[in-house]
Length: 96
Image (cartoon, rainbow, N blue to C red; front, side, top):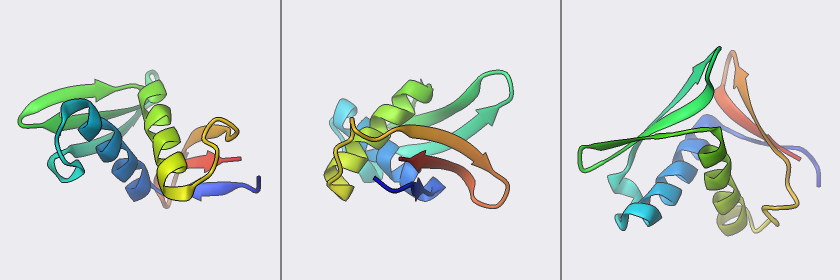
Protein backbone atom coordinates (compact mmCIF):
# COMPACT_ATOMS: atom_id res chain seq x y z
CA UNK A 1 0.00 0.00 0.00
CA UNK A 2 1.35 3.41 -0.91
CA UNK A 3 1.32 6.19 1.66
CA UNK A 4 -1.96 8.08 2.02
CA UNK A 5 -2.50 11.31 3.94
CA UNK A 6 -5.85 11.90 5.60
CA UNK A 7 -6.45 15.59 6.17
CA UNK A 8 -7.90 17.16 9.31
CA UNK A 9 -11.46 17.56 7.99
CA UNK A 10 -11.59 13.88 7.04
CA UNK A 11 -10.32 12.92 10.51
CA UNK A 12 -13.14 15.01 11.99
CA UNK A 13 -15.63 13.35 9.63
CA UNK A 14 -14.36 9.91 10.66
CA UNK A 15 -14.82 10.75 14.33
CA UNK A 16 -18.34 12.07 13.63
CA UNK A 17 -19.30 8.77 11.97
CA UNK A 18 -17.61 6.66 14.67
CA UNK A 19 -19.10 8.60 17.59
CA UNK A 20 -22.56 8.86 16.03
CA UNK A 21 -22.82 5.09 15.94
CA UNK A 22 -22.00 4.82 19.63
CA UNK A 23 -24.56 7.48 20.55
CA UNK A 24 -27.28 6.43 18.04
CA UNK A 25 -27.43 9.83 16.32
CA UNK A 26 -26.57 11.03 12.83
CA UNK A 27 -22.99 12.13 12.11
CA UNK A 28 -24.29 15.67 11.56
CA UNK A 29 -25.34 15.79 15.22
CA UNK A 30 -21.76 15.30 16.43
CA UNK A 31 -19.45 18.28 16.94
CA UNK A 32 -15.73 17.48 17.03
CA UNK A 33 -12.64 19.46 17.92
CA UNK A 34 -9.20 17.93 17.44
CA UNK A 35 -6.44 18.84 19.89
CA UNK A 36 -2.74 18.28 20.40
CA UNK A 37 -0.79 18.75 23.61
CA UNK A 38 2.96 18.24 23.94
CA UNK A 39 2.46 16.17 27.10
CA UNK A 40 -0.80 14.34 26.32
CA UNK A 41 -0.49 13.91 22.55
CA UNK A 42 -3.53 13.81 20.26
CA UNK A 43 -7.10 13.89 21.51
CA UNK A 44 -10.53 15.07 20.44
CA UNK A 45 -13.62 16.46 22.06
CA UNK A 46 -16.91 15.10 20.74
CA UNK A 47 -20.17 16.77 21.75
CA UNK A 48 -23.63 15.24 21.23
CA UNK A 49 -26.73 16.90 22.69
CA UNK A 50 -24.57 18.98 25.02
CA UNK A 51 -22.68 15.97 26.39
CA UNK A 52 -18.91 16.14 26.04
CA UNK A 53 -16.71 13.10 25.63
CA UNK A 54 -12.93 13.15 25.36
CA UNK A 55 -11.44 10.74 22.83
CA UNK A 56 -7.80 9.67 23.13
CA UNK A 57 -5.39 8.71 20.34
CA UNK A 58 -6.60 5.09 20.32
CA UNK A 59 -10.20 6.27 19.84
CA UNK A 60 -9.16 8.51 16.94
CA UNK A 61 -7.29 5.64 15.29
CA UNK A 62 -10.34 3.37 15.75
CA UNK A 63 -12.49 6.02 14.06
CA UNK A 64 -10.00 6.24 11.20
CA UNK A 65 -9.99 2.46 10.78
CA UNK A 66 -13.79 2.49 10.45
CA UNK A 67 -13.58 5.34 7.92
CA UNK A 68 -10.78 3.64 5.94
CA UNK A 69 -12.84 0.45 5.74
CA UNK A 70 -16.18 2.00 4.83
CA UNK A 71 -15.21 5.03 2.74
CA UNK A 72 -11.88 4.03 1.15
CA UNK A 73 -12.57 0.28 0.90
CA UNK A 74 -9.08 -0.53 2.19
CA UNK A 75 -8.35 -3.23 4.76
CA UNK A 76 -8.22 -1.10 7.92
CA UNK A 77 -6.07 -3.55 9.84
CA UNK A 78 -3.44 -3.87 7.11
CA UNK A 79 -2.91 -0.12 7.33
CA UNK A 80 -0.51 1.52 9.74
CA UNK A 81 -1.93 4.83 10.98
CA UNK A 82 0.15 7.59 12.50
CA UNK A 83 -1.25 10.94 13.62
CA UNK A 84 0.95 13.93 12.81
CA UNK A 85 0.94 17.65 13.53
CA UNK A 86 1.53 19.57 10.29
CA UNK A 87 2.32 23.31 10.32
CA UNK A 88 0.13 24.00 7.29
CA UNK A 89 -2.56 21.29 7.36
CA UNK A 90 -3.11 20.95 11.12
CA UNK A 91 -3.62 17.41 12.42
CA UNK A 92 -3.27 14.78 9.69
CA UNK A 93 -2.99 11.00 9.58
CA UNK A 94 -0.37 9.12 7.57
CA UNK A 95 -1.66 5.76 6.42
CA UNK A 96 0.76 3.20 4.99
